[in-house]
Image (tube, rainbow, N blue to C red):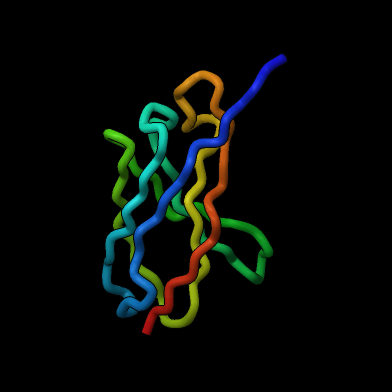
Length: 103
């Protein structure tokens, strides 16, 4: 029987930002050896799908992404796909979506 464990994903991000200004999103992965990189995705309501905004390398279980958003509400999430998982026995996972308001 094969058992797979989903890594825990923790996100630290501001709730409100100025539109067009780059800000940092911090990501924590536990266990630290579970992934080599993380992807940041934004939801596009017109297409009804998630679009990749960028990737960041994981070092010591932490990653930092710089991103900017337009005015309005943007729904984001962190994703660990099968190509980003490095440890054996871990499965891919999509983090809980969070919103950022650009003004």
